[in-house]
Length: 194
Image 1 (cartoon, rainbow, N blue to C red):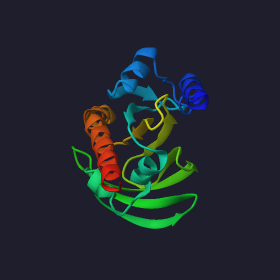
Image 2 (image 1 turned 135 degrees about the horizontal axis):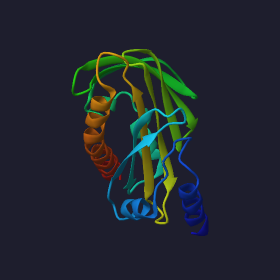
Image 3 (image 1 turned 30 degrees about the vertical axis):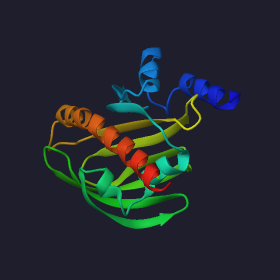
Image 4 (image 1 turned 90 degrees about the vertical axis):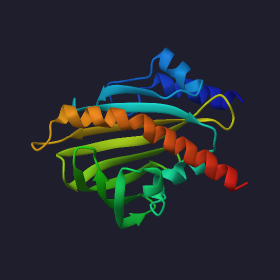
């Protein structure tokens, strides 16, 4: 029991990725009680974006599967109209996405790197709409044995055809619904697999 608690404390002290936002004590408390925390953040290059943190009652494998199960991806991530796996191996995947971004439809290719399998997945734009897309999914242990904290980060530089601030505002509004869908999907899948 000591190891998960120690890992959790260390994970929350260390800044998430190289972004200029860390979770406050109040944020951590909110996540531990089942709330979803969504905050504005900046990446290492100063590009604005968001970070969302929430807890899921599940194991690493079931949570990780949601992020790499491309066959069912559009069922969980409802803004993704369709996707095409261009390449996939144990280190990551190159995926082409067609996305309903709220203000317009977007098409882009991301490299999704499995940095630390079952713990951290990052992505970067390879081509397509938008100037820059990067982000991550990270999974941390919580003091409760079968409860994990999931942290989502997303940073987008739109370019010229849509105002970046407007795209970020839409993303902030959609982030909570996405977190709820992920939590519901993982927890319902876990129940069905028992």
